[in-house]
Length: 308
Image (cartoon, rainbow, N blue to C red; front, side):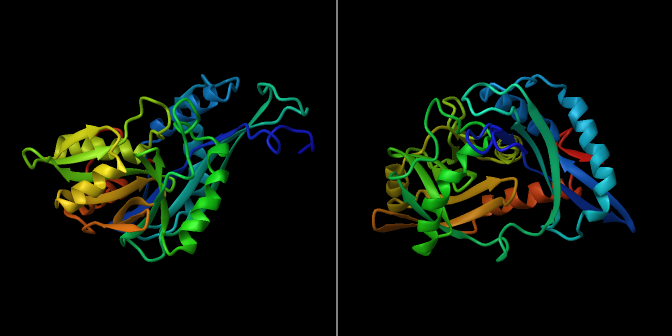
């Protein structure tokens, strides 16, 4: 790559993350993708946000090309629950000049790599460090898109959280809870008036929350296969503190492609801990349902589990 090309200086880069999973049925190996159409749509929107030409590419054609690649790489798909072939479609700007301008040349490539479970400790609860000193995203920014520049600035606060003994950062915008680490975040709380259990997650309408594939899947499952009431709104850290004191904070979890679902057992904020029951029944249910659908052990909605 020429030294004057764009990515090292202005991170005009977007990517997606998918997994290819293997299941053996009567000695026959079957491999599956999970909702790749959503990743292609998100790639298009992220390219558009970065003013990249070609953002209106044929999503079905790229999915077809991806499937052909995976047929070649299928022997690299590891066996076992939690194991998969990680897939990263990436688009970077490659025009050879230093000026800050919309890209005119792009490179699309796809990386695949065998991976194991995201957390070496397995499906176990994690503790979070919450702070509004550092921001992951803000209204009108790029937090709602999968772009490279969103992630490097999170490494310092993440290192600080680990140094303090916590697994991830719970990102705040003023008092509002937005995401956890690089995942969407969910809370189950009892309504303070009638006690109805409600699944709460931040909405997508102001552009600072990533439209996660796992997030969308959990919301669909919650609305169609559970008794939970669903609310897409910003919970606040003050609300979580009050709900915990009143016994209304039932459970919490993060959700994303890499970890699928991660239980949350504690949130540390301004010197105090919010303790949360973990692993809760709803967290366990979403984990069970999603992983079973992803590996083909259980039927999901039409178009979710795609055989390759």
